[in-house]
Length: 327
Image 1 (cartoon, rainbow, N blue to C red):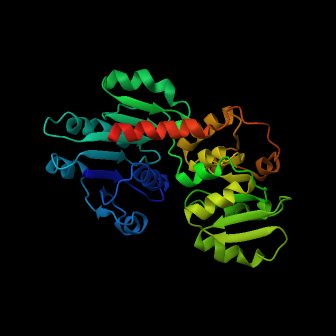
Image 2 (image 1 turned 90 degrees about the vertical axis):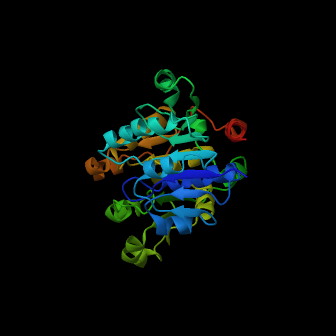
């Protein structure tokens, strides 16, 4: 059995997507009881059940100390808003480990970066839809690197692949903002969203739920607390369209044939949103701080066909490529 080490983070600044991405990858590779380094230990113990959670402030020291103990290293380092240099420095610092002659492990690096930075790893997975344009850049710094780039390098979980070709009656619109809705957009714009002439399902954080639960008996309004992932995907699949942030939901909804309206809450989300807009998958609204009620009133609820339709077989082939790399 392979000895595996993983590094990832989850918090309000970097988002919840890193944990989800790692969890899906571990299931694709059927990896169990691996070591996971993270700062958010308490949440990680709940999220990554049956894995060994390690809290270490200095990831690099830990890896160097245990350089010959692992067969596989999986990286999904955090990207913090306005701290791009930190992300680039992580890559430069890891180069010393990657070139260490004592190491035995292969390295998989997960990212969704919209501007390329050097990657010192054996397999790079970047799901930014236009990341195939970064091919030569990555090879410039690492000639041995293998890459899986573009929209199909997103790790589609089994539940999505099971749902994507099933026809289903569309019941509602889904309104849910990434993770715990840290910018409280549902609360801020609730009275506008509530007027949209469709049945609406709001997925809220605990604070917002308590403040708007009195509207649950109103016509065409359903208000719920955050759902387990499988139940959330079912709600998404049943949606006519969704309103959210430019995050993992864009990939998930695209695979299920559900168009969306997205509001960026981080600068880096703007580029990801633009890429999806080019494919006619979403409508992109202004950055949340610049968003006005006039912008919201201009929302068009009618969508033309996606320029790029989801291909389930292609998504499965990508996952087989990752499996073959590890085995």
